[in-house]
Every structure is written in C-alpha cells, then in structure tokens.
Image 1 (tube, rainbow, N blue to C red):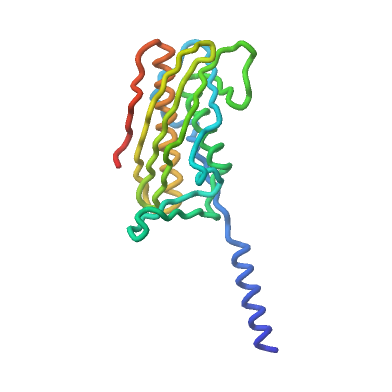
Image 2 (image 1 turned 45 degrees about the horizontal axis):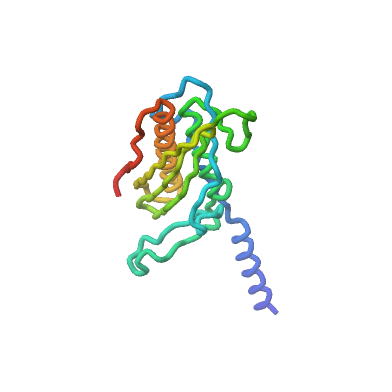
Length: 210
C-alpha cells in the first residue's frame, strides 16, 4: 500500500510539473520607435496585403526550428509547444509586414480595416519561400512579392533574401526573426516608394550574410 501511495505521489508531482510549465509568446512586430529607411510618401496612400502563401509546416503558432546537427542533414524540424508566436505564423508575419510598410510610408494599413470604395491602394501579394530558424545560429529567409496599384494594371515583382545571425536561446531567436521581418518591411516599402515616384526599384536584393 505504501508503495502505491508513493507511486501515486510521484505521478501527481510529475503531472503538476508538466501543468505548470509556462508558455512563452512572441511577436514579429517591431517596436514603434524602430528606425526605418524608406522615405514617407507625400500623398495619402493605402497599403493592403493579401493572405500570405507559405510552407504548411510554418502555418501554426508554435515556433518551428530546423535542426543544427549534421546527423539528419537538416531534415529534422522541432515544433516548440512552449514557445509560440502571438498568432498563427502566417497572420503574425502578415500583420507585422503590413503595419511596418504602412508606418514607413506614412500610409494607411487597410489590410484588415478596409478602405473607402474607389480609394486606390498598393496591394502586395507575398510568398514565403523560407523562414528557417536555427537555434543559437541564424534565421534564413527568402521572400518574393508582387506589387500592384489597384487602379492600374501593371505589376512589379521582387525577390528578397536575408540571413540574420542570432545569439543563444529562444529569446534571441525571436528577436532575430523580428529584425529580419523589419528588414523585409523596409525592402517592400522602398519598392512601393520607387513605384510611387515612377522610378525603377531594385528588385533583386539580399540582406545580411549566410
């Protein structure tokens, strides 16, 4: 009987430990005072992001890490239940980019709020080719997007990639993801600013170093 009681106590203690494990939440949105490199536009402009296209493995709130070991040749991924974005990753990234681009251009983010009928907007269709996080090392990102003003038929496409070094730990990884998202917002904003000014955008860009 004493053995059963002891076993029961151990099981209860283990369950209690599991239940009390905290869940950590992170955002990709940059602080409001973060510096921006794009020049604000003069006329009122609306920015609108379409739903993002991205690998299905990333379409979840949990952080997804690629293994940094050599044994699996990079095939293994870890889904971290206790470390999550504040919303599912595709929404988190879309919100951060839309808000970041709008703030850099002094524009109105109509992605979720909508806009007045007949009001022209720059519409961004973005595809995530990669957003690979490797703990204690770096984040590798590859994006491509198409920009079109809704009152025009012409489109302009860009490819962009970056590799952002990160420090040890998940907090540093989240901060690196935030930095590289901010850099992507800069690139998209510069693209739209060039189109608005009727100048040729630099549409094959790479930031950082692998």
